[in-house]
Structures are given as structure tokens and as C-alpha cells.
Image 1 (cartoon, rainbow, N blue to C red):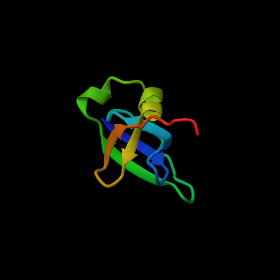
Image 2: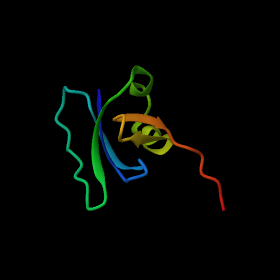
Image 3: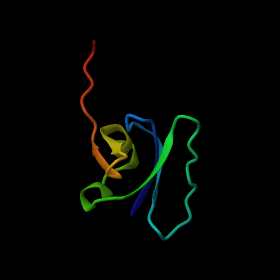
Length: 75
């Protein structure tokens, strides 16, 4: 399965769809300041719902992969 994710420079996913290769999906279009990543999902991530993928992971653009989002601490 392929994740098509729009993300910012920090890797925060702001929009995404999962392409299972069997059905047509809308391709997200990044606005100015955002990028589109096409990431083959690892088996451990294939089972996760899309909202969990987007909220608990981020895009590592250099490695073209998903990584766990770092916990953000209040100032």
C-alpha cells in the first residue's frame, strides 16, 4: 500500500490518502510551502487507520519514510 501525504517542512502530515492499488483515489495537491510524499507503507503501518498515521507519525522526507512524531511539550 502507498501513502500519498501532503506535509510541511517539519514532516507534519496535513492531508493524506491510502492507495491500495485496487481502487482509484484522489491525489492530494500540496499548496505553497507544502510537499507531496509517496511512501510505501511498512506492514506494521498498513493496519493503522489513516487518522492515526497522520496524527502519530510524520514524514522523513530525506528517507522517504514515516517516523514517529516527537512529543511536543508545552512551552
